[in-house]
Length: 332
Image (tube, rainbow, N blue to C red):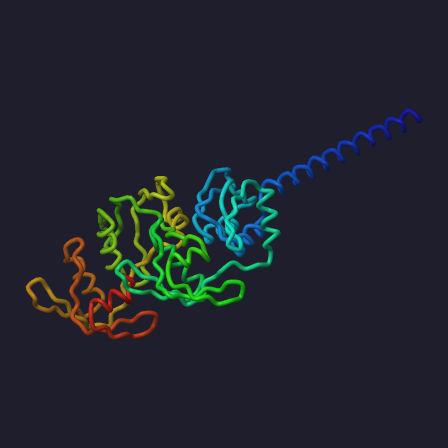
């Protein structure tokens, strides 16, 4: 009996030691993980408190490297990554001081140092210039994000000055791009990848239209009703961060571009009229006649509308007196 008790005690000690060792190993792994990666709250704290010099590189859930080009990208990365890891070195700016961050320990110390602070922010609304020089008002942060999503990758927004920013609770008027960089760093660039042409789309009659270049693609988007997305023929390729990516499904494309670009034409109040090649006018009674007219045009040729005409956009009827007004309303 004594021998059995001794063996039982010895076995208990061994098992307890194994459990303790396992617990110790688990704790050591947790401590190591905490030292080599960030949590989501720390990443979001960086966005709120630090001016980060982009691009920076990061490690995804699949241990691949991704390029982060803006605060919006960093927020998205934090939301979908289990253990965020940034690749060092990279630069940040705090209180006007440019700091090179060389390792995770230094980064975590800096995050604690600026916790609760607010970096300079835009005071909305602000305005940007579109490709044709017309202004577009940006109402809030989400509208700015949508605007950047619509820009081709590496295209910089063009702000309309003066604009106002908030710095340490004070409102400061900024008069030019250089002054803005002093307070807020380099502006975030466009996020939409480059389409690699030619590519093809499916028309309403299920026929296939080949899109030869960017200008033809813009003309095609102009033929779509407001809110209608292009229907791509897959697979096709895009270029993002210098890498060519083959896109096989609409879901893959949506993930790359965040929000697929929609048709830009608002709804016309019919009837409207257009000028034909022989300078005669043609009345168009409804949407079906307008679609048939668009199909009759050569590739890249835009319709010539007779003004004034009325459109409905966001539930409001607007009278337009020129092509320039129509272009400005459609964001061209």
